[in-house]
Image 1 (cartoon, one colour):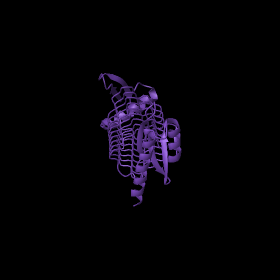
Image 2: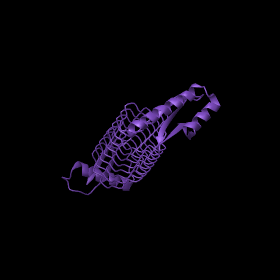
Image 3: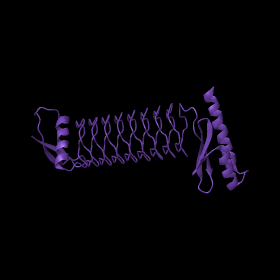
Image 4: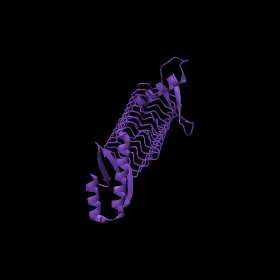
Length: 290
């Protein structure tokens, strides 16, 4: 049968698919079959209205879906590796267990989407909207999430090792047990986030806002701004030792005080900042032990 797919912006017919199914089959099934037909026929899916499409386990690898409307679509376990979804609308979509390795999702709207267990390693999600999305156990290792909105997102046990989250909004996000080792979180907004059991080893939290964050036994203590470039540093406890990070420097309290003292003077305000931050970090560590 012939099945028309429309453009989400103009309402005009974008393409007419040839699908095989019963006349009384549900609209979502028919639309899903039309998408699969379009992939094989290399029809234009950019900006298409595919809301509610049933695409469970579908192969959409490297598909071009820029600005497409996939709201409430069912894409559980679908293969979207390398797919181009810039500006796509996926609010409320079910992407549980989907494979999105190296997918391009800049500015995509994934608010309230179910991405539990999804594979998003090395995916590009700059400025994407993932507010209140379910990312439990998702793999986002090495993903690019600069200025992405993850406010209220559920990221328990998610793997964000090495992810780039500069300026990202993680306010109120649940990151219990998440792996953030080596993640870049400079200027990230983590106010009210839940971080119990999260691994922040080697993470860069320069200038991050952790006001009201919960669950951290030894929260990073920021200080600054330091020097001509107004750098923000931070102090964290790693393996029961004080570690200071400032710009390219990462080392002990003694090493940091010497480096800064040699450059700005032992009686400079910058030295005092580091000492104060280290003192607060030790107090947190002591409270955690008690």
